[in-house]
Image (cartoon, rainbow, N blue to C red; front, top):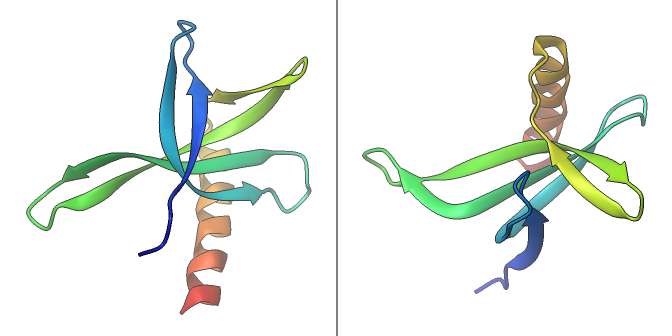
Length: 89
């Protein structure tokens, strides 16, 4: 069984949570970085794993996550994910 890589994320309220790191993504123009992670949650009939994606931003010496709310940014992130999916196929 493959060992999971765990990372600690700091929430906006200052609390922390340990999550499973799935992968990092970097935008095509290298201006944004993203984290793809799981909290171990399952949903649906097939018990699919819930996956989260957030933009990483540097705040001093700490990396923080920011929600992706812009539709153009979401489209760019989905394009990056498709590249990974096609490379793994």
